Every structure is written in C-alpha cells, then in structure tokens.
Image 1 (cartoon, rainbow, N blue to C red):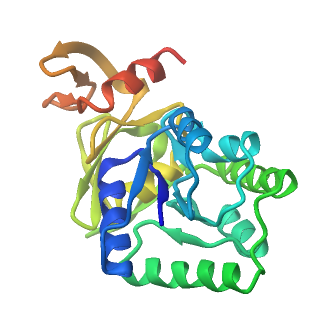
Image 2 (tube, one colour):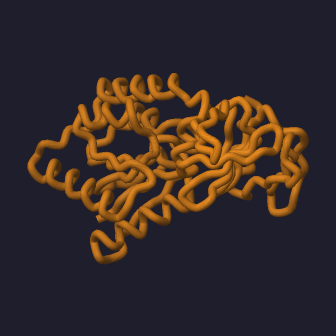
Length: 254
C-alpha cells in the first residue's frame, strides 16, 4: 500500500500521518506534496491506493489538479471549508472530513471510502463533478465574512473584518486586534477563521497568525529567510515563518 498526501500546512500533514499510522497500526509508505505542481509530478511517476487531499494548496485549489490528471483511486478530502462545499461533497457521495478533525472523524471517513471502494460503488471524480465542486467553492468564496459577533461583558459588539489588522491563535479561540490596538476574542479556531476571510486581504504568515494586507506599515528582512512586519495599530512586530515567506512575497504582488 502507498498513499499520496496533498497538504500545504506542516502540522496538518503531521496529524494525517499520525492518524494513518494509528488506523492501520503500522507505518504506511507515502509521498507528500504541498502544491498542485508537486502533486502532478508524484502522480505521473507513482501509483497510489488512495489520496488524502486538502483543497487549498500553495499554488491553488486541488480541484485544478484533479481536472488535469485522471484519478482512478479514492480521494479523502480534508479541509476547513464547510457550508456550500460540504453539501456538495455529501450530494456527490465523496468522503470528507472537516478541520479541525479528530482521530474518530478520520476513522469514519476511512471506513466510508473503504466500504464504497470494496463494494464497487466508488465513482472516480469526473470533470462534471469537479465543476460542481468548484462552483460550490466559488459560492462559498462569495460569502466571506464581513463581520464577527463579539461577546463582551457589557453585551454583544460587532467587529468589521475590514477593521481587523491581525488574528492570533489562542488555544481553542483566537484574538483579533483592530486598527486601534484593541483585542477581541473570537470563538473559533484559526483554521476556520482563515477560510472565512478573503485570501486577497488576509494571509497566514505562520502557524498562529493571520494579517490584513491593508494594515502592513513596513516590511524588513530577517534571518533564516523570514520577514518582520510592522502593522498599524500593533506595537509588536510579527514575523513570517521560513516556510511561508516565499508564498507571502508572491501574495504581496497579486
């Protein structure tokens, strides 16, 4: 058995490897790609029993890869996308787990894929199905968050997304800092919030922080291929990780 993992986030990839090992009770040989380009190279040279795939990769959505390369093995999608896309997956009988997922979620999805494949009920992704999924993804993108409801001691307040300059993970919650330096607690994890914000405005510069391009005041080079960012309204500078710097530079020039 050999599998392909398409996942751009290192912690998510490590979690999937751990879940696969626990499920099969042994190490399963695998290849790992963080982009469609890398995935295409692996698929051209190797055969796999199944694929674990995120939707948003470093160079675009994985649907583009599956539209270009014919895939005749089961794909288990792992992503933070929900609502429109989740309904589209269910309608088309595609195995899917929603981030942040647990070992139990993974086990149930694996059992679903195995039962469909063994019974001969698994249908490989067709161009028509991929078009439906991409349309659902576009519908979801058209509904990016415009504001968050923030619970305060004195009641409920609204925080406009346009006023957020940084979002930082804090346990199971996140702290959003606005342009005035005020901090607001959002009852969602960083992965969920990231998917709710427009990708042309917000970028995940490291494992725990999202920044809004409209509030970048200055950018400085730092050691180990990192960048220091001075954000309006925030005293402390934030830093890209070495693994996100190259993609961040490309994002800035979009």
